[in-house]
Length: 273
Ligand code: MLT
Image 1 (cartoon, rainbow, N blue to C red):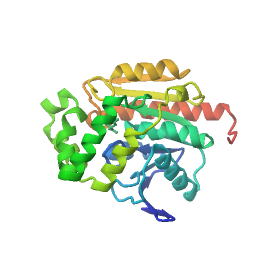
Image 2: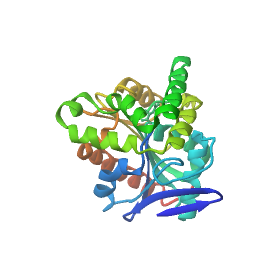
Image 3: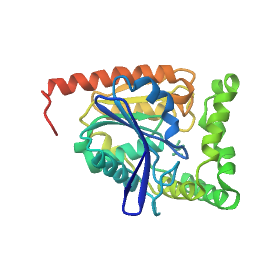
Image 4: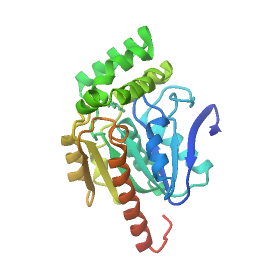
């Protein structure tokens, strides 16, 4: 489906019924990252998965930023008439989820931060983003996919599930090059969200693959310590795209979390925020 505002077009999937959950993909992914979650969870929740601007079928003028991605998601939810939702973001989607919390918290009834981190890029990380931008300009998205694929999936997945590695590589390589460049600029310039964590007062779930080398379990532990009452789930034998590598395990922890959010909302007596 397609939602437009101004010059911006956001493609999204919207399946199932019940409390809404919004799935935000990472870099340079698209909404198909969440196919297994939409298939499994649509029986118990309304699952909305947008392509962030510049990725998949979504278009919007640069410059891109985490705030801009978050505002696009808020505009989509407003267009769909959706009130507070669970916001679930993986990696860059997690950075967007934290921006969404800062800018649109009345629209959040729970947060899932998956394979992500709160900190911004150190100087050497910013320099690597610039190198990747040059690579994308000169050799396109397939070269970026080649450079990223080893860190993107875990060791066990690379050894035992080559078809999963190929599927993830195809997704990265198919990203529009303008979206890749805009995304890298947004990643390079994103703010530090560490101080944001202490302000989160809705149910929060942190998920990380045990073998994630891009945003390792140590980062998840820091977020868990900083978010009061949060739950930490470590997915064994999964890397950076834990939801693709171990979908059943991730679906299970998401279903449990959705039940927890429903119960906490019940205790609030349906209070609207
Ligand atoms: C992602 O998966 O979104 C990226 O690896 C995030 C990052 O590079 O910081």
